[in-house]
Image (cartoon, rainbow, N blue to C red):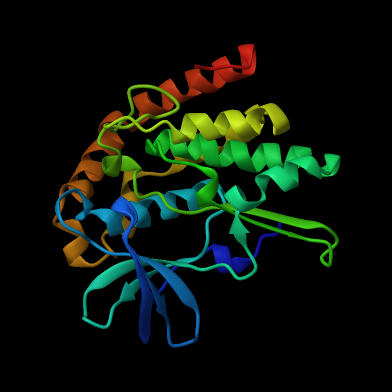
Length: 267
């Protein structure tokens, strides 16, 4: 895995072009292009339960960066109609793991096992904390290249059903199921875990970094988001929940990790 700074920051960008609208449930998206030619997958506010989509995605990506979990660069986008949206950079040369997992598994390189165990575990631990029930192979992005000395990259995208988007936060169990129930995180974890294993130390490191995120730092970053993003329930919920209930949630997550390390199941 590399530490490309492209993955580590966000900016405010006015888009110059929008195209290829895609509508699929909560994943209603547009693609957009910034003035420097960078392309984004866009998440905009929608009706009803989708109103807080941008701030949910923004918060999850920001928390991911604080924990060292790999996500693409993300930006706050000013769209052509002057509304604000969340944008994650479209990673050139990547494909979804859904398209690659079978072939990748069959041609498994043993030297990658520990790397993949760590990265899968980091993403899983973050998803548990964020209450994301919808982690499937279509929202892992993957790149593998012989030309780069068999370099391997694996990153997470799409947290639209995490936090208040899950319908059940904090989750009542791990892996999170949400409401209505969604078993993707559980189902797909049981596809990678028997192959690559679960890296308990990586999970514990994510938890330590989650505990280090203060309410003040969370509030400071959320207050940099557009006013329109902060009028829904998610903004106030997070700033109330973080100091009052976050530590109990982390303790429950630690017990889950301990169960995974002791008996290999955890649920």
